[in-house]
Image 1 (spheres, helix red, strand yellow):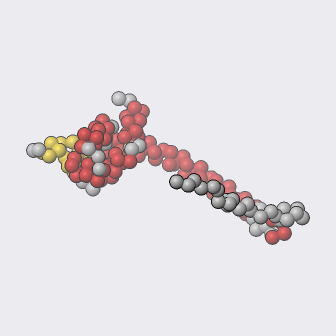
Image 2: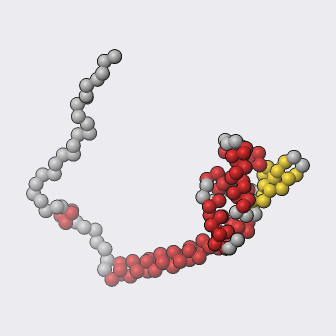
Image 3: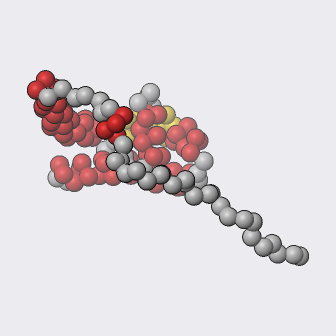
Length: 144
């Protein structure tokens, strides 16, 4: 699988709230499938589909211990996604820093002053109309 396809699969897996909740829970340590499924109020087969998506994306590893299946977080795929996001975080941080410098410079060159009450008026001598009433009179009712 290419790096782009792997990232697509990770982000698609994380696009669902149930799957994000499972990943969040697994950051605290391994858990059984039934422990993971319990807070979601869905059938076990339905929940297993979510686990399969997480497993296919490389986010979760399942191991069978006797009759219990335990799940554990596999951090590799999350690290790849975090590295991809970090590039864009740097990009936006640089852009926002540049905007901050520009605005600071503008304030130094041309200080902002609050408009006076006079300058806020519309200039029109007409009265401002009252807002319309919320509803009209009560309509006809049906007799039973």
